[in-house]
Length: 579
Ligand code: ZN
Ligand code: ZN
Image 1 (cartoon, protein in one colour):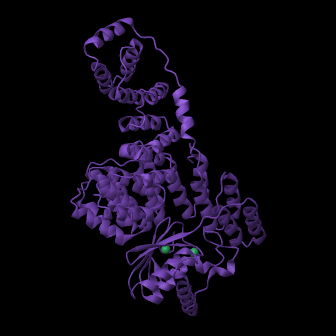
Image 2: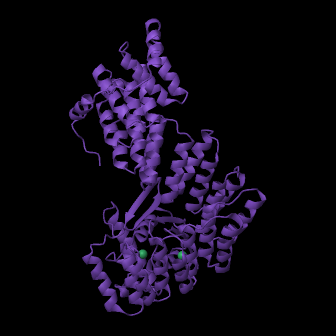
Image 3: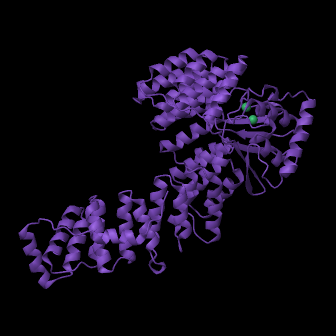
């Protein structure tokens, strides 16, 4: 985190820096000395020319020669060029010396120098120094470019808080500032904020560009905000922003993650498909919808359109095979990737294969594959095998897996505990819970989003903070009474066997997706479709509950969880309970 140091001490430190003389050829010095008597302004031109021609070292050498000659004091333009050369030639020592000279010459607060100085410090990842420079900028000399650079610097290291602080402090901004902060929100899992910043940007009269829209589409995809996504798409057309492959991919991703796979296909069909990323978005979209045969059809089309699949394409294809239980197909593409395209399998490919084998009950083969991997398996791979151990009731293998997992999250302990519970080994299950408590494992909190009335509503598991919380819980209770009458048995009897990744939430009936659904029931007309997005995997209890509720309310309910889509209709789910 950025700690504000006394800027005075920083300035003093820089001020103390002495300019060390540098050996340079006397010939060069003589030439420049003779030149100076006739054309002093040529100095800055010489240095600028060297910098621009890509000879920063020569520029710095010339600069030192000038200083040594003692004939001339560098002016603003010279110093700016010198800083530029320092940045390109990665000469931090010289940059600090130049900063000292800038302070001594009284140019310090000049925007044409503070911006390159910030750029130099950022080039060395000296964010604190850059931030100090930014803090010292007077309002009259405020420089948007420097602030944007600083925001980008913070976002590069994932420090959203400080990026946001700089953004909020800016007296004026440009579209680059907005794009950085909106993109930053998306990358830092703050999709709701990204969408509201976009609205604020429009209200303040800024013109969004292609970059803005691609971030907004990603944000909408993340929370499944179809209405917002469609509105933004309409706005993009209205503003006549041309579709490029980044925008097309973002649109395909948005529509498929918002449950509109047909619209995603329409975008795909009319888009220019000369970049593999568009194909990858389409394949990934179809995969999360469990449309394995469509994925294979698209993959075959790539050949006809002269597009070479890349590593990401195969992740999508293998994921689709995994979601559809296509074991043979999966093996085929896994081998094809190596033999025909010379792509060495990465963690994601192994992950998809282990998942496919594990889900299909081939636990030994999955375990063998992990052991034979030439790269170190990550936690995701072990976790999918652990999950298969639960599905197929294999506490013996589960124990082996958990031993190999170096960093376990709450979900892993819950899974192991569930494996024990399902094998009726309650004592072991209880031991895992105690271990979790002792180790202070943080719970992974479930979050769900639902879009109604033009706003996105977020629900946490067990949430009671919502303004309409009382009404939401009344709806939930009412639904429970009705589906119980139809034979629904909640999994609460298996308290130890809390089957969710969310850990025991006190009450299964307050899982975040149920809260989001109840809220949508309150706010939307009868029989309309309800779409909920969730950050974790949905649990068995919620899955069964959603099926029953879809039949009782005669509604289509779409739940997108971390893994895939579930489309509940008339008591059935599109995943055919395979997820
Ligand atoms: Zn649940
Ligand atoms: Zn399902």
